[in-house]
Image (cartoon, rainbow, N blue to C red; front, side, top):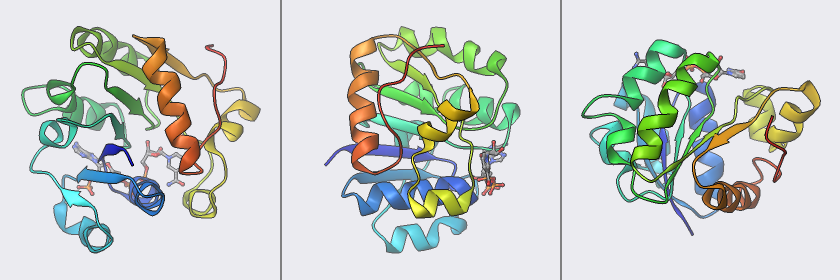
Length: 174
Ligand SMILES: NC(=O)c1ccc[n+]([C@@H]2O[C@H](COP(=O)([O-])OP(=O)(O)OC[C@H]3O[C@@H](n4cnc5c(N)ncnc54)[C@H](OP(=O)(O)O)[C@@H]3O)[C@@H](O)[C@H]2O)c1
């Protein structure tokens, strides 16, 4: 069992977090509107008071939010995810955002001794529920997977994603 954090529990994030819970991981979550996470809390998710608090002590932190502005809001600043990342942790960014904002995260993530994995997700809420392998879809659609920082933790994390049936590992860096 891994201690994981999930920030952004909307249509996609809630379903992904549910799969991680079902795979036996400990999941600490944060959502801007906490009431939307009620069902997940009933399924074992623990709600944190801030993205930073969710990230603290997590081996890996997922972000799945609407757009560039939302990603900046949840990752940067004193209460953002990056401020809570421990050395060796992996930030797994899954939102559909511009590469510019992902690149902005590289230096601050790296300064914490953590790694960044950019995994934009294709498919839909239905494919997540059905457990299709997200990275298969990314691979076949030719989208890039980018990571920075220590390669080893990123690869380790791919294995954990596999155990939740979320993806396959490892893919080449684009
Ligand atoms: N739905 C799909 O089938 C699908 C498929 C592939 C990729 N995607 C991508 O996945 C991402 C999430 O999509 P979704 O369908 O899960 O959307 P969604 O249901 O609208 O959820 C969006 C999430 O982002 C949060 N959020 C938005 N603005 C924020 C801000 N300023 N600060 C903090 N949190 C903020 C929302 O919080 P609140 O709950 O408080 O509003 C919610 O948790 C998007 O980038 C989308 O393009 C979606």
